[in-house]
Length: 452
Image (cartoon, rainbow, N blue to C red; front, side, top):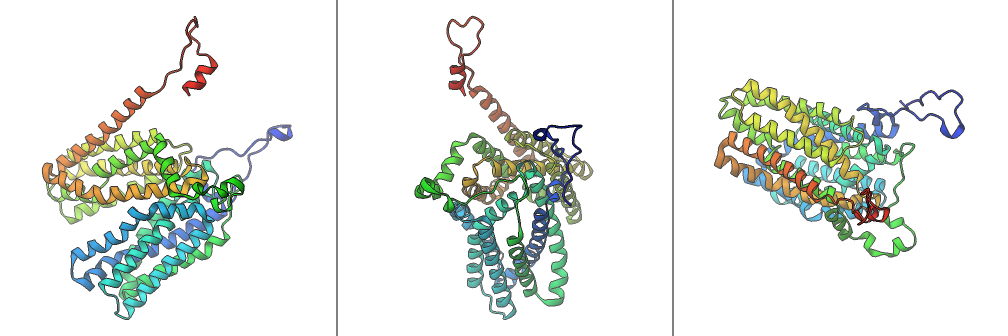
């Protein structure tokens, strides 16, 4: 439903008529028709993806009989993000986002249908499985930033946190629906049906994309390829290097990467750390860890709703939330019982989810529009390093210090690193230059300009 304008003030001048009241509702992004359709499409797509993921590892085990092969297939699919995310981001900046997203979604749907056909004909082997996983990973390097930025184009900038929060809720809802439908679908129609359903979900998104329209007040973003004159002749506007250079020269993005990186390596991997803590020192079983996982999921949903209420997220907010999360992790590591752990797990998940929403909003709005695809490509490469390197590093820490020690040490490392970075930033802040002989110590305009 479209929002109605606020009542005008008595006898306003034409140019000063009252604007609609700024809303802090977490659902404000859904005021826009195209965003509602995009959210529905993403729910269908996420449900299909999680249907496939639910059975995929079991299928690999069935084909190969090897847990190592299962891990290898996951690595093969993730590897292109490390190597090709920059190129994928550049493609998103070069071509219209709706076209790029539609083509990438159609390509992913085609891969799912091919896999479903091979499974149905009992022709899927390890070689073809690895090829399909690698191709999926390559397409995903384009699809990820294309779909993220396309969704952002549908709402005004002040409603972007709401759009990201709604996206997180849609992701979680799709995950629950997909996992639930997978068992029923596979039990009735067979394993190939999960892949076929995923293919249909991608085609549904492809069909919705042409009808999406930006909300009033949004800025239409022209792809670099369509820019006139000098920008079109300047080959540097299309290069991967320009996005990388912007990222490394932008202190707030480097700080965001550092905060997210230290949190990803020494925290957040709760499926590993909390599983060992619950089944080890706290003497719980699989059911107890299932309860912890449920509380984590609930906290993630609550955090997504709270994050959607943000209007002006900042790197400082992300850092503060990450430090708070680190301290909560320390307390979780010292939990004397499962009941105490459950009390701590909920705010841990809430803080993490709000931090993710704020960080994503900063990342997707800080760069100029013509560079956002490439900046997201840089982020994709860096994030892959964290996702691949974090679990082994945390596992080594757990081997040395145990589950409690890993949680406590990791939380302290996160909190202390962020506090140290904040203090270092304050010390490096440039002070205004004061001219000699200025008795009242008021900085001259030129000095202020130089200091800035």
